[in-house]
Length: 479
Image (cartoon, rainbow, N blue to C red; front, side):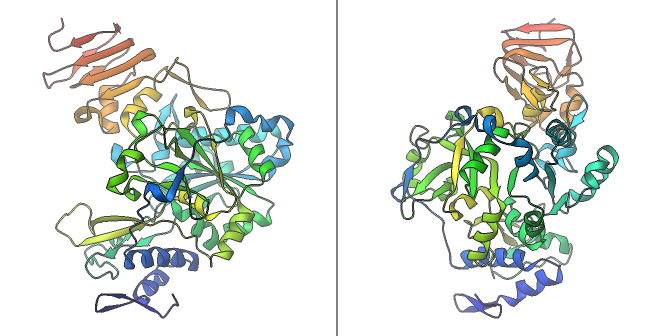
């Protein structure tokens, strides 16, 4: 679609220039505008994105990280010199009640996600004498807080070149007119995040992609900042370099708890790997979608990208990857359901697997997929079921991860958790812990086996210096 072209919705003509002018005024790069235009064209065309099972083949066999051992024969110092680690750091953790960058949340031994990530990078540099590059992809919501924290705690990293890649903004689209959404009461709410698929136009439009390539950086490892399992694995790096793939996705085997989530597949039409999310599955194929024996693997969002091949792929596609559209319908003010309905157009970075001729995937242990999405995850992570290594990685110390189910009414938000769990109990021998009602863990508590603690009184009941061993207990009645 040319810059002056129009798109048609029924009898109404909607000028593309309205979006173009708004984005140009906001200072968005041409790459960001091209990516939004591609999403917008899919919206106007009514692209459903549905992918029935008849159009895909299941992926049954993939190489496994445990079998690679590629790092044993590689020149790791040289490879690391050609590598950048990029952490997605645009989230605020609002679902956990946070109002700052989620990576600044204290997770273990007084350290934040960002502390552990920074220390991992510095340890790798020191051990191998090779300066692997470090990049944070921030949003306008997280940039200031993150840089202030780095300045205080890791100023040496902040002083480096191209530490920050800034996420773009995306226009909200009026659902009725398909024009740019208007909200004069707070114009900032006319914009939304574009999803982590924005990493590609952000790299291109900021000039960072060209600068990294010019500096000799070929391999980019990308992962979420809240996934402490996503460390720079040297066997994976060596394998990625040796096979000369353009794109490599880390996947895990789906378990029963993963059946509602997306899966990896191979498209019959062109033989390319692709991701199919639940919204892309027709209702008639839901049973097959949830069959974890048929569709065995899910995306961890740990990705490896060959920057030279990314550049060539972007050039060949006119500067924007054609990623499947994620259309979210909301109101322009998400806190006011009476305001105008809008579409927020997003993309997912893992979807780029279908944009590369030579993309591949590798099966990794579940330990490389350990995101902290809820206070249940945080509660377990802060316990002795996990420990921090000399390399500043977080590893499981227990025989298996404890299954934690805290009462959402009392533990959903971080400040609630910290009020009721000022001292996280020992969970190294815990199989599962279920808490119903407000129970305050005050120190010296150990949970062993499968334990359920109930407090129906509505008022917090404190426990301290006590071991609960495979028991179901009503603390409001317990003396």
